[in-house]
Length: 502
Image (cartoon, rainbow, N blue to C red; front, side, top):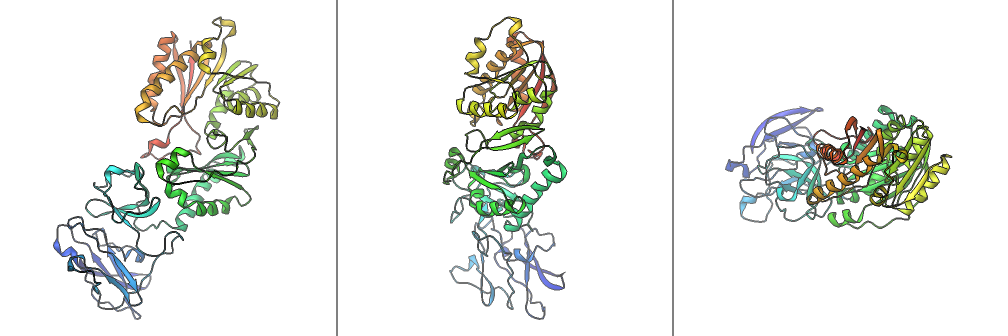
């Protein structure tokens, strides 16, 4: 590094140093000219090499010299800052300054005491802003941080790439939370991100006017990779998808209760996630179902029922849209779950008859309660939809005017996408066979690995094999409380296609 200029900041003078390129051998030492501030000195390191001073709290971090494959780690003691010279050939600490340096760390979380974060280096240059960095792209750090640790990330040239969660056991080894060199991952960070998520739902989307059940935090869509929170009236359901977020569970809980102080909290992680991410989440007591309201319709939300976080809030807008086609119509709700589409079709849409079919006896019991809650006459059938549809009468009088097909996720494995598409094709072909000519089909997929293009192509083939003509009216997805970033299309998992079938 070479000495640079002095900079003014809040009335204090700092010596600013610029990092030379990694090809220069003089990178190995740090020398800073003395500067008088009256009570002591402070040093900033410009790790971007463009003369812009980075915050005081970053003055202590020297990034890896990729050319020499060595680390310069600053430490503190009562005398100020002392830095190691890795090229000195010994383990001793060498003074790098001509005067004591005042140390100022940003206050962090209890799990991360003041001091430099572990640094993890990439094998690649960081040319993407996607928050997931896979194992094959990451050098093995020594020592290896514990799963879920907050780390600083540098690319293969030693340039700053961001801060986030590290998990050497996970295929997604790094989850980048911020690329801003000035933003620390501390309690204030989580408070800001959670407050922004709450503000979006309350103030911009004004969801409280139509429902008390919605997605409050949508992982990457709200800048909190690995965290999903759903609100069900007085219950907040937290689902963890990463060891890093699970490690911050107490902090997340505190931040949420700042906005919803009287809420009960149910927090969990699915077993396959715990296995992939190498953490153990104790199974909490299952809370009693709570009653939620959605466009005037009431439902029991049942966290811990093995059906997502308790209720499919992602289909809220699609339930209301479908109801507009149902006045006086016969409606078939396949894979009906707790009856959301069918009951909305009856209560808001004014359907003349509604039949719901699902294989899960437990969830159908909740569906019956939901129908009773709304005084809606809905007939629920426990059956495998493939068998039920194949036995369905082929005469026109028995066919339905509206059919909803909303199956569970087909696969989490990329290798199983083609078999999943074959299942989708088979069930959609059968569903089309249950529709009258000119009938409405709402068909959905929540399998994130199946793209919208693949799903629409499957529908084209299903219509061909069923001998029907498919006219697409609208392609929808999850509600606006499930935002997704343009550079993270994985967050846009739900496909909901409204079709007219001749």
